[in-house]
Image (tube, rainbow, N blue to C red; front, side):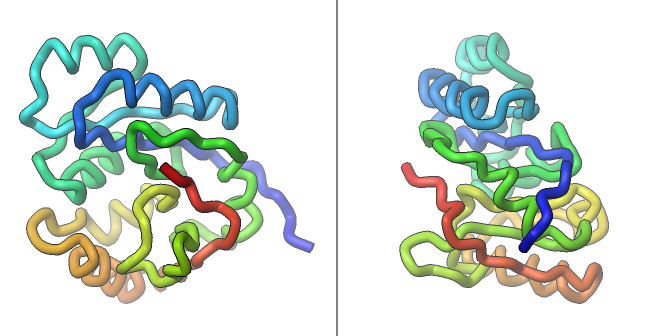
Length: 178
């Protein structure tokens, strides 16, 4: 039987649509399913100041560039906790994903992601539910910001494996569905 470890989890909410109501809904779900877990939002640089002002009423907001990998990089640079779980704004988190992930984490180099729609490889997997430790991100460096997301993730995973010996773990039953 796997032991549940008490780890420091937080959420990085990617807001590519720059929609405050989507952010608010996702924040509500985090507060309901993960009380006490910190969270931040990341928006594209092209966001209007009034939208950022509205979002900042609910959480810390950071800016990336206009690609998903740049939002991920900005989120990990400003991670609210040791372990970060990515979610896209507008997603409702119904279950306690942090406790499920705790069972499979053996060390800081582990990278976890959900099996979703029968996709169980990191490069083609969903970003919703991707869990990375900020120490690994600091060692490996940022994701490339230009190109196809699956190629970017594949290249980054090779660096993570080579530099940190990261193990990529596809976890069943942790999918965060839109």
